[in-house]
Image (cartoon, rainbow, N blue to C red):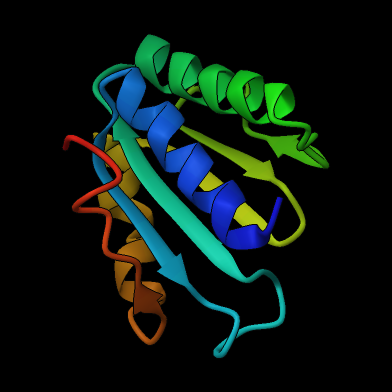
Length: 118
């Protein structure tokens, strides 16, 4: 899978579990840490964990294994590192506090109109 397909697959997995405010940002031109950043919100700590679990499950089924996971015990911000794609699943409060949408505003937003139902 390409980095784009991985990012879109993560967005679809999150959407399938009713994740909120899903954003995919192409950051390869502004950073060396990854090609894409996926940002989404869950409506509770249980939902945040369920969203992260679903991303890991769906991408694993597609043959893409997560390299590293951070924050799984906190359930307010879980980061799944797929090397070229970083998936961030936040609680509403954590997303507002860390404001990754603003931090990565120089990246190029991916149009998800025909990809997710959000």
